[in-house]
Length: 361
Ligand code: PMP
Image 1 (spheres, rainbow, N blue to C red):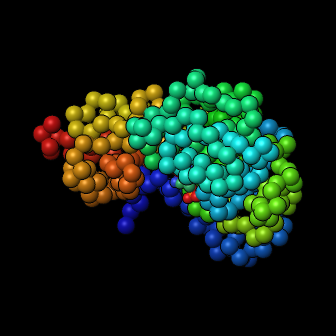
Image 2: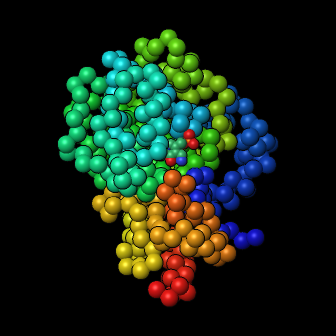
Image 3: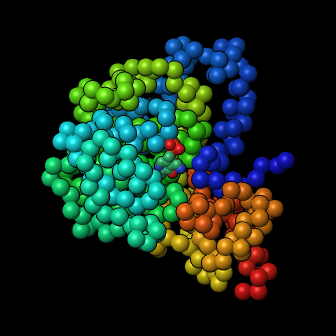
């Protein structure tokens, strides 16, 4: 079986070069005589892997000195609880609800603090990013929360909201490393690795040093306290060693390819090509508002569920996998992360054209 083009939203495609390198090193990592999966997380060799991964990420994202990088577990979803636990002072936060994951994060936070939903796009099934210039940010909030790229709906914040000096927390899971980011504008950034950074099971949290504190509610599990993880350099307990190792390889690959500026250019080129086709197609149409469109997840429908299903099967037969949209949106979703080559998008458009022709449109 040849490798296919995997348009899955996460776990997602990884660069072939990375997979080959991992394969080469799998039975014996350097001169250790064992695989990374067998190395002690307390060994010097793993320590080197952890620090090299962290250093590479810091260079890539230009992460300022005062920020810590933590490699955590529990998925991005566990940070939905960790965020309020670690940041609560007044016990109130503002949430901008732009999709399923932001809503889940708000609901989880509401178990511990008062949550104000200051903007939402739920009225139109999250197909747009709400007006960010009219936000009513309260003076007493501990933080303002956003999910910057909405994996399911194919939307992305066109710019960051002005939080009036309040700490900005962003779930960047599905846009992590896809473009340069000004880390200094955020208090906390977190991402599940399984989209653009590596295998599932690693969560990367980038947090401003002064937000790491012992002053958390007594019910906070030790492992959810960022300070626990920061003090032990992400080694309080056994981390996902293999996952961190693969993430490090992906970071190196991105650096070798030219860094985040280069990723952005490539990603814009791919997304532009697909959106241009969608905008001219008589059969397919994009579901996200044009000015809120994601570079990473492109959502579209034919308007006929049976035809969508037929199209997905047609793609499948042509080696284009995992294009089925999330059940809350239906239709199709092409996730075109860093590791998706331009040729994959070209092939998708060719297949779309051919399907469209076959349906005499
Ligand atoms: N946030 C976003 C934006 C996501 O896309 C996802 C998963 N698709 C999550 C959070 C949840 O991530 P996890 O499964 O790692 O908990």
